[in-house]
Image (cartoon, rainbow, N blue to C red; front, side, top):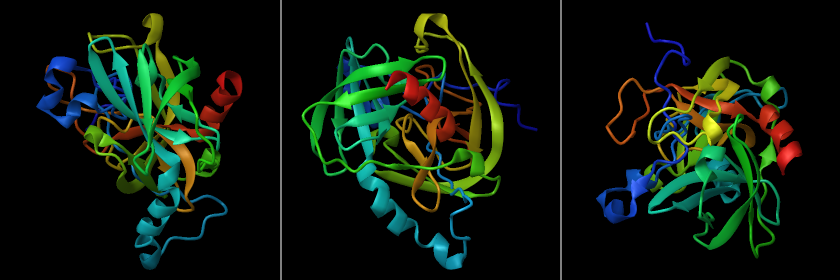
Amino acid sequence: MLPQPRQGRLRRGAVALVAASVLGAGLLGGAAGAVIGSDGASTATSTTATSNAAPLSATTATDVSAIAAKVMPSVVQITVRLGNAEGIGSGVVLSADGRILTNNHVVEGARDITVTFSDGKTAPATVVGSDAGADLAVIQVQGVSGLTAATLGDSSAVRVGDQVIAIGSPAGLQGTVTTGIVSALDRDVNIGSEGPTSRVSGGSTVSYKAIQTDASINQGNSGGPLFDTAGRVIGINSAIYSPVSTSDGAAGSVGIGFSIPIDTAEQVISRIG
């Protein structure tokens, strides 16, 4: 029997730190995983059916490519510099003028932030506001306009078994799409500041009721969106359960990922961004 999230090893995964001197060792170094409270994350991909979403069918499942093509411009990769280390996470565009939602652990303490869009263009960004306890942050990209903003859904309408789609940059592989289902709702995710790679501000604790998904989430997915089958954001991928990790905090997906419900995120956005 698998332990509950609060009992398991939730890895602080928004940003996996890698020393600049060993950046060439592999892509995992910059991957901000969907793992909260650790350096690993997993890409959650599942499809959530809402009251307005069309029922799924065998043909609907094959439309993931169409959904991905529609929403891809609203998903970005976030690269951060922290001292001599570099991290990579994901984010979702909130406005045409460059407001982007991500995890706090992706950008916390960053000296420089660079956003890479789906077309490969890059631009610098700064933090507008953050909530360490909720593990959410809003950043502002500089000198951009006409961006494709994501459509935010209603996470209160999500049901167990709904299909979802996750998009992000696991292991620095931008634009990676994964799919799965909603495995459970209202999972308690509680992550304290522990270990050399934990970066929760001031020793605070991350705590929220999460959407659990079996969609693959890995390091680099942190801050990226979880979409329903209508292409609406219903969660922000933030953490994974990993029974095993390496000495540098790296961890991989075992099919237990957690996303912050978008309804919760919108409340935080209204305060900080």
